Amino acid sequence: MQVKDVMTKGVKWVEVPGTRAEALDLLRKIGASAVPVVKRETDELVGMVTLRKLFENPSEEQLAMLVDRDTPTVSPSDKIEDAAGRLLKSRIRRLPVLEEKKLVGILTVRDIVYRAIAEMNIEEPASNYMRPHVIAIWDGTPLRTAVEIMALSGFRALPVINEKGDLVGIIDDSDIVNVSSIETESKMSQMAGRSEGDKWTWDSEDRIYITKRELKVPEKLVRDIMTKELMTITRKTPVSRAAQLMRQHRIEQTPVLSADSNLEGIVRDVDLLRSLAA
Image (tube, rainbow, N blue to C red; front, side):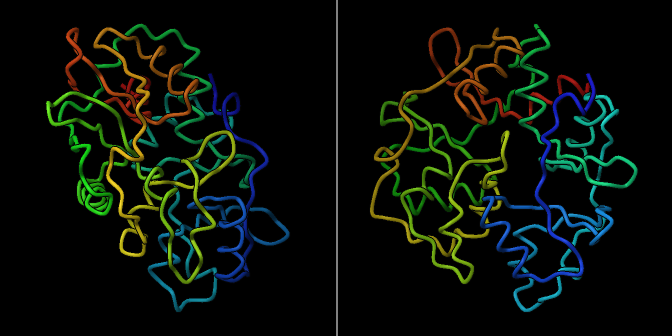
């Protein structure tokens, strides 16, 4: 299977010469945390501009000065396995797809998981790629504390346990943002959403790290907003089945439970890429 078989087409971009305002306007419009930058009139890729870079350089107005020019890329004919390895090595969630230096698409983690891994009948247990050290959160934790735990731990979603230690739900940063107001110069409250899929939406990783000190979080507890209907897998669930469940329920991670329903770990969509890149 090749990149062209699963990549997202019809990509939106900004052009150089251009301005910071133009990039922010497009990011707000499509709800993304990063967008490609191309040369005007040639459509040749210059790099990527991220919301993080815009917020770290609030006084820079020239788009050319804000572009990350060392962006890894792939071509439509590259193998999916090679692209998965590149995503893992670079620790990113999307790759511009170039053909003769021109941008023709974007390949995301979800593209590979939903359109490739879910269809490949990989029987290896998904638990081979789970994160066994999981940070769980008590369902009585205030939301403000949950925001800080997510930001400090680097986890975008946390399993939720009750006073007995039973798994009762899961909370991710989009759950928190969706019930909060965000007070920033660029009105990021207009950008709420989930991470990228067939259409780009807000990347929750950047959202929580950039806005955690700008969030006006309501006086609620984790149990008030957590997802209670859990989608879980066992140690024996195959990789492709886990990918199918993620696609079906539009989720980025799933807890792994033992035979007696104890939490043993969590598998993220990006973890499944390792089944291809191994």
